[in-house]
Image (cartoon, rainbow, N blue to C red):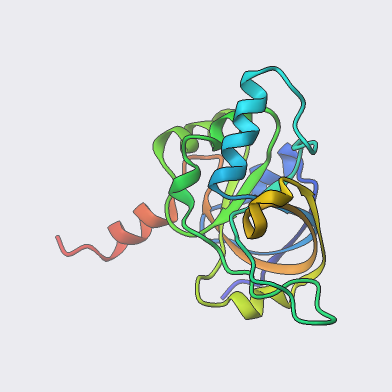
Length: 185
């Protein structure tokens, strides 16, 4: 098994181009959280020509709704949520400079096209490992949409956040390639 690639946010085109489907990565730096309701609001702001509540250029958005933090901890369990629900919104954010997303499950064709056109990447986090993933989160603060509760946009400082490249900017797709590898012909 290959050693995990260490990457630091914000990501550049050059960093994204080096990543290939199946690469294990350890992410350090800042990532943002967001789910359906927050994404809907972000895309509505873009449609109205208004600024986003944070600069998405070079950033990653983690599709997560963390549980409340225990006393003395920055966050509760923080496992990935199903990504395809963000399919209608992700391409618009990628066009604004977002360099990637983290979630679970395959993202759609329009997202895959946006990843290739704008040099972005989609990472899969391991479902069922929410408590383990939370250990890589050092700090958490709400930056927008506090009224959404667990679905508010949070700025997370992470160190060695584990993920796998699931869809890359070269058209690679771990879900399709993995399935094809083991299909009985």
